[in-house]
Length: 436
Image 1 (cartoon, rainbow, N blue to C red):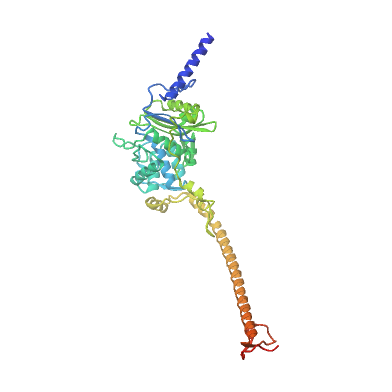
Image 2 (image 1 turned 120 degrees about the vertical axis):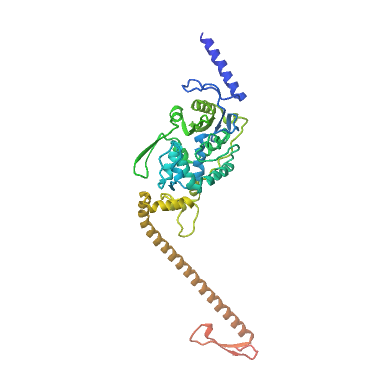
């Protein structure tokens, strides 16, 4: 009887391996409470996030509504255009977005970091629109920036209309493929401001009214139900029929799975990630790879240049801006100024300004000392050069006069009172060499 069970288990293992080799679909995980039921998702893809090698995929280029999973794109574009310290001003358009929201009110100023947590964890639509308007000046321009960013990252099948992934009057304008969402997921994992937020179960903060708030991650089912889960973003709507971008790390290796059009997105994400971890990278789907990571956030660019040499007296870029919250630019900046005039400016800005006032005096004094040292060194060098040139001219004149005496062209009378050539008396000679 025991021998029969052993033979059966061997046959089952062979069948699973044959299924993976033929690329028919992800291998079924065993011994797990969340093994997905058939049918398969409309589309899926799982890839090694470190190398980009695609392990398994089905209908990976079919464009489908991503719903709130599109907010990963919003986070990437927002951070490519604004530093994490930015203060967002809330417009009437932002405040009237449908649920889920974080209850932003028109005229308020929200820290970008709080809005980003609400966007990625609570899928807040008002936070998505606030990030979009502050980053690009308008939702229409932000849509164009999303499309431009998508082309640069290598998206192949997407149409990106609004920052929240909302469907308009039952006709979705936002569509993405599993392939494109895997690209987005891989880029998002490379940005600490996104990856660190996506793995949190809860986030606590104080809103502009002074009230304590707690945000719970909508992706907690994945985070708590799969070993090594690290995020990223689920989405659901009538048009999307559920979507999930799910990442996990085991043994130093990270995998990212995308599931579109399934009633059991977490079960399929678990099954796909299981297959990724059990498959060597070299045995991926024909070694097909996702495009390389190309996201370039403001904070990443700032950190990259912070160690470069800089002009005398110029502060380091990172130290000059990090730790201070910046007002947004353009249209959003004007709204922020109006909000400040109304008294809505966060107290943290005032405190930061008070702390920095003393540091500015020390910085100015250090600059003055450096300038004085440079001037002193310059004066010494110029003085040495002038003395050297006078010495060279004096030696040249002495040589010319000595040569004239030897040839009898001039008689030179040198007063005994001084050895300076400038004081010699020169009289014409008779053309004969002088007697000694």
